[in-house]
Image 1: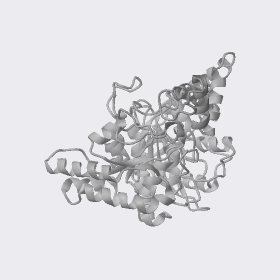
Image 2 (image 1 turned 90 degrees about the vertical axis):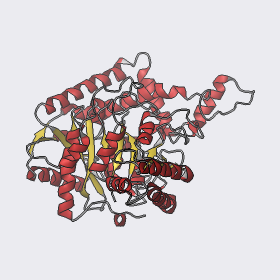
Image 3 (image 1 turned 90 degrees about the horizontal axis):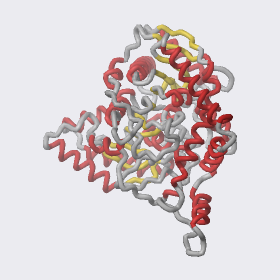
Image 4 (image 1 turned 30 degrees about the horizontal axis):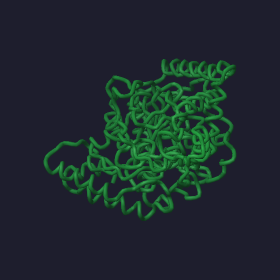
Length: 492
């Protein structure tokens, strides 16, 4: 069953939330030893939440369409009843004193939080190999990555351990793992979902968003936790776009769709491009007008991102100094404060986090600021202008979500540049703050692994991405005789 079907069955009394939650906890116990999607699962607490929802529904409360449905929650969101580690040793055992806005809104909507999911440490990575608590594995092929940084969330939904999950998208960390795990994943407009209580990586880029196995499930979760939050100074005070209505339309007749010419060329896997071009032809057959669109500044987006994001992370992670949170090393009375800070950060941070802190600190240092960080911000402006020009002519832009399907574990671990290229197609949207969504568009012929179609729309036009995604999902389902992702399709 999809999440919206589960929700309907729970509201009607056909199923109880307790029974649905117990089934998913049993599935976690059965397969998570192979997948490692979860860092923390509290069976008793989840069952208590589920029984409370059943009681409220029996009393006649209207809790919304996802009430009683279980969800996996990325370990970057603070939660008062579970540890929050950001997959880092430096926060091991930390119990936050407050809920993130997204966490609180999940509870208000009656969703049952099963546990916290694995991720790249502080959301830095594209494979979930940078977690301090072991790698997560792709349920389609356990020898391959589930993407990153929200790889635990994507793996949990793909392995049928949870029908829904949360993620955060700083450079593609929802869309990229969604694509390689055969899921739908959305990056809302920046400021459309609250960052309050999300452990910051790069503040001008971080965006909470949803994962689901269908477009409608993803839209329902998007709507459940989005909207203005006065506790987040970057939160947009505007209504949530009508994403659920758009997800039920599945109609692109009359839409103008632009194919980004710069997100095509060398380095793309042939099977990925084959499925992408078939998807474009499919959209045209459904009544959309397809045109090629050039966005020349996109070719410099990767370089700009890897100056801006590390610069912001070098500032944000300065707070983890052994004085306020989690781990403290050499606090024995024989070492001074600076020694304790230095030794704690040396032991608590992993290699990728240290690499980005050093890169960002260098880019912001005196004498180099204008040459590096300042130039990267100028490139960001050019990328925004490319988007504005494109959206003057088309309703949405499309591209492959990732250049390749899921790559083998360890293949890019020693080559940071090869790892960074996994986010080549997704990064421009983060720099501009627009909305985007990845929807499955088939399996690559050469390896039988999922391929994602990325749909990009202007800020606060998130509904357009769901409208296109729903049309692709419906047409492919009809052509292929069913959904791409089924329990039989995965290896666990």
